[in-house]
Length: 334
Image (cartoon, rainbow, N blue to C red; front, side, top):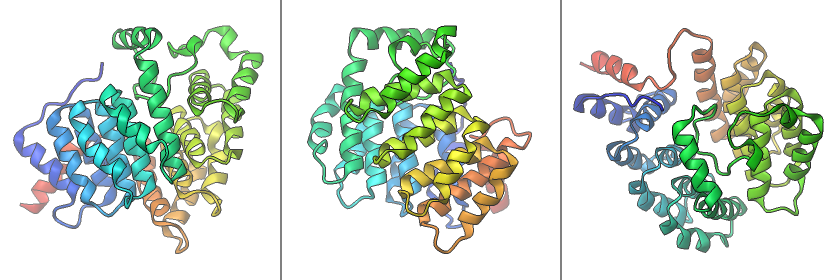
């Protein structure tokens, strides 16, 4: 299990000031580092601080706040997540992430509101509520309960709480030789691209292909970028950010450069490229951070991605080093 960092009251105050940009001059990437440091605390204090950030005007930041609240997986986050989901004036990208976070927390008390917004006017929100409801149902199944117990005692390749579990044979995260066979990848690709299947089942194929992780599996995942669901495509880009396979770079660059693509998909592609951090991605991230026709969420994502790129090519021990940043900021501001 991940080690929970120990923080003092003064450090918490500094992290809060950094996340909420109380000084007005904290760079967005430092706010993200403070956020992920708070996420690692996994307690109600962190939930309370993170929840204050929804007053911000950056949809990208608020979307990330919701994601982190889901990953902390504490029921104390449900009221603020519900308030975000039910606020129809909020950016759909933020509302969708709030619904997904409710699925990650997986409390049956969230079912009524998720059912209500499964009929929302926005497709991304509708589809996310559909998937979150299916995940809560699966988590409470015999297979789901067994998987949760096994996860608690096993070392996981991917520590994230995903919107859907991989298909049953790949739940452990360690593919057997027959799992990586071309025939199995072709079978999973078929499920991934089958629009007649529920999104939850297609997502299960997606995360199974992630767990396989071979170039052939990456190619199968990349074929999903032809789908008409922005939510589906953004999740593929997120999976590529987990895989960190250089084989996915050409597909991700095509997505980032496609001005006709949904901002939500392009933003996720940018952050995935920042994590992969191969030399050829750098000029593209810089370009789309600076272009006047680049949507705000894409510009900001490229800024975050460039910070991730620098981290991946540095000697830093961990990305979530908001404590170090906050201490430095406190020294500078003294």
